[in-house]
Length: 391
Image (cartoon, rainbow, N blue to C red; front, side, top):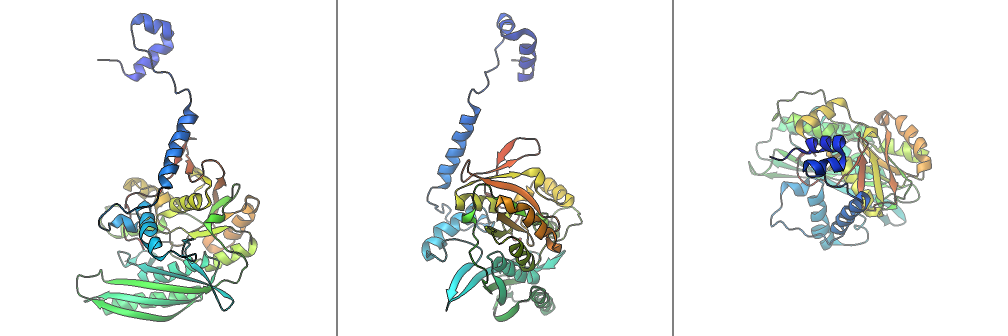
């Protein structure tokens, strides 16, 4: 049996190449003479694959198509964008920017199918309001009005429905918005999961300029407003399918006040996104792709609660891919980073805001993470479906 590579290395260090030859032992292969070149080849191959025209290869929709990663992006671009393509839709931001009789407004819509309906820190009701408010806020709009559509399963307890609507009322009051129209449908028992909520939101854009990830430029700083992964891990544990106990609550919250404070302090903010499905990793990839830039994030700079990190390790999940419902990612000019962080930390929802990385010109379209061990690894879009039904 041949010696292990450890034995070979020890032998080489003690005898040198001539000694190894004299002993009749196989020499270790030489180190790669051009590791940087090989790395660039890999990056180029990834970039070429990403630039291919998206195509849905599956014959049927799977849960991965709703997870916020590669499958979701392919479905959106190959099916919906292809069918409805127009200049207002093509930016694929969290809300459409419209001009009506000279006024600039933002319009967004979302659906909520979270399971379980009630979880530590919130429920489907306040999640629906906060999520819609946040999509408007990160588009630079002041949220004003919401619609609420309910799809109810036959047999759903009226008491639970009242609990959901009361939660929505309280959340709307906190965010300073009104639910002004709605719809109700009831389906047969077994045809839904108790209660689904669909919302739409309208806001007014009062500031000059437009926010968008395509505006990111080399030298920009990337900021997250607080610890990531709280919501997704809370939902995972609340299902009761795992024998794990942790003191974790959802971070669901309206971000319109936090966004207003940030934009007042730093008018030059280039982009904002709320880190929902697919987590922070997905947003970083959206920045890299839309702006054709590279992104370098620093693992040690990303705030993650110890409880979330511990639960993630037990579940084999990277917190960067875990959904938040009360956190935003901001792209600001590098010279404005300190001012932006200070503005966020002055608000209760941004007390742990931190710069987590920078935009760069190298490796356009690629997100890399500087690990705690000093190396780097590529952070790609989510492929599988580790956390279904988180919103």
